[in-house]
Amino acid sequence: MDFIDVKYINLLSLKLQKFKKVKHNLFNCRCPICGDSKKNLSKARGYFYQVKNNTNFKCHNCGVNISLTNFLKKVDQPLFDQYTMEKFKEGFTGISTVRKDPEFKFEKPVFKKSVKIDLPKASSNPDARGYLESRKLNPDKFYYTDKFKTWVNSIKPTFDGFKYDEPRIIIPLVYKKKLIGIQGRSLDFSNPKSIKYITVMFDEEAPKIYGLDGIDKKLPVYVVEGPFDSTFINNSVALCGSDGDVCCLEGSSIVFVYDNEPRNREIVDRIGKCVDRGESVVIWPRGIDKKDINDMMLAGHDPMSVIKSNTYSGLQAKIKFNEWKRV
Image (cartoon, rainbow, N blue to C red; front, side, top):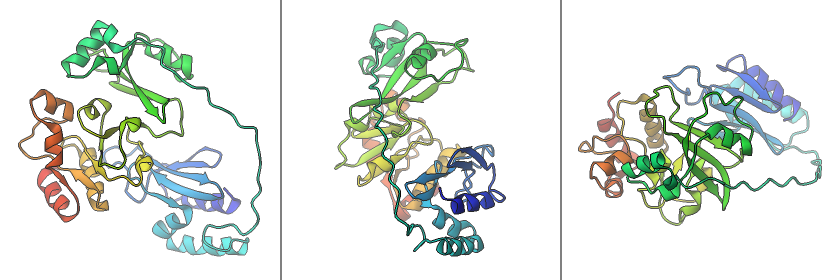
């Protein structure tokens, strides 16, 4: 980031909620475009970051990804006018293009170590196998560890201590034939304080999405909320967290499939944003009372058939969405 970008980000900090500097050339705040989470006012999912010679703003809630220039234009017109004038005076020929010749710094490339899962299949452990089979899931597609934190730290230092180490099912996240991360599913069903899913990325630059290597981008790609759900849907991927970025699916026909929770404010807000953007989204029919695809499968429904016959966009999506939501 150049000094002008940093200056105007700091000026914005006086108006942005939960603003903080994360590290050099990375700033975090609540997104003023979507308002971020209405339910949890402590959430801040907007980031200013550097992209080559430019500065961008990205929100991991609404998905907006724009230049600092366009961000200023949206949220503060007077500040935008000052910013563009100052950029011009300092040698910028346009809104975000530097006129001076770029400086090239060649550094010795650092090759990332290939990560492999040296764990037994989930089918080898009675508890893991029993849980997965009870959910009609194939235990040979997943792995098992009896000490999740210890195993994760052997690959990437993540956890400070091992006091509450526990067994978990390991769900591999693979992209371009490389293991980019994992999601661990707790087997401690008796402990309400146990975090059900923990996601750890070994490659922080990779998309936090399950199933990317198993899809055909020429066909409609269904984006669901969890890896287990995706195993029941043809040509689907699963977001492994609210900051899952579907930019890697650009050019594909995407259909968003959220859980069937019409009284869940966060899910309702996400579906509403998809509808407003004109995206294709599934609006579950009233005859389905199960909240997710796995539960629907266990109840005897055919989720793939239901999804295909209840995918909407545009005006029809708005009508169906308003009929479905309960908040």
